[in-house]
Length: 251
Length: 338
Image 1 (spheres, rainbow over the protein chains, first blue to last red):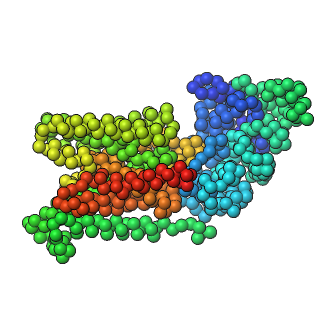
Image 2 (tube, chains in turn cyan, blue; image 1 turned 30 degrees about the horizontal axis):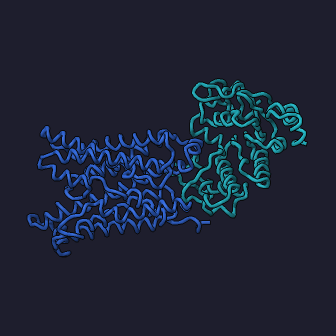
Image 3 (tube, helix red, strand yellow; image 1 turned 90 degrees about the vertical axis):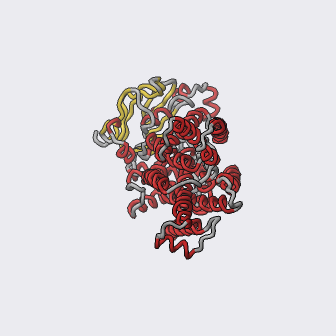
């Protein structure tokens, strides 16, 4: 199974030796999208933070491109994996293009000067997420939907093999949610990138995911294909929804 | 596409030219009238022995050079702290870093004087560095609990008052004749520097500036926040330590030789941002440095000539010009313009 890009084996994650989520197992290939669903506070972000290397894993193994993540150097890691976080940034006096350009960080030299090749990747990323018109505007002056796309372009620009996104669509309206996910899907398939994201929009998660992990009460309750996951009983138990409410809101 | 890329080399070159011109004006003007011709003669022919020779080489030159280097250092120190806290209101003076340095320098000076040992210029810097690290360390501890910059500034100003109070106390009770200088110094002044001091300043400032340029790339990534910087491969912990040490070293050098100088650290980087409309570290570093040099040299010229022969303390002048800029900076930030 050489084309598995990222996998987790019996991964336990948490803070200061206190386990937040245990038993995380998955493996995904390039072009696939894995979504993490589950109630608020279940630990989806903790799992993503651990995969992205912000948090030390408590036990288990994460393999990225065939290597144990613990053995990959900081530089190499950042060339293989990039992120779009929930935190909102407020950089001063930076245009959207300049924010995207920071994604070239792992590739540039001592003083961060962009080469012609770097600029090409930046332009390609900007085109991919369709932010050409706003690219020279101040980042702080554009809308949330546009900011999120800029952050995606920044992550793409890092030319990763794995892209991790923490609730990337939460602040967006329906139009922008769909547009964002559409770009993501296209990116995964055409760019041969494996995508891992957490989401609250079940209907969208069902449509775009190849694999789904359900996280609740500190453990992975179920994993599988969208078809296996998005059943009435599973969703009802995952989110503690009564049958009456399910009928009312999901039908 | 190229038109979008602003060219920063020309403006930076202009700033260097301006710095040199202000430096020359500073050397050519003063309370005793020395003609331009005589000044040039003294410079190139080096006819020693005259009073004017001493005035130029022992008073004006070192003072002008010191205000140039220290002004740049102060402004750069402010820029580093602003980058660290992601906030344009941070600076060595308002965070109590300058006053911490002032206190330790005063204490160690007193200690060495009572022991009958004169303090060397570099040991003053070391002592000031220790003081700035202690107050900065305290501010950093508070910043773990309190995320709001305004509260941090209040905390910094309180530290600053405590340190100043203790320093004043020490200075008042010291009866040594050398203490007269200490009093002037504790208010902030560029006077009394000699060429030997300038050399020490030059070494410390050069080392810190080179260090700052070396971390300009990770500093650019750090502007997107610690987590994004980490995801790009920046060693965030190391970077943060570097920023704190470098800004502490820069402001310690200033405090050791000129005492606490207010508002330059906030005002100059703010003006640089407004003028250049960028936050790229590689552009901001030279702009802040030379901007600070120009600002301090002009302020020092006013300090020594406005009410000549009486001197005004440098902080009085920098506050008059710097504080309004800081207020504007705060207001603009509120409106979300910056």
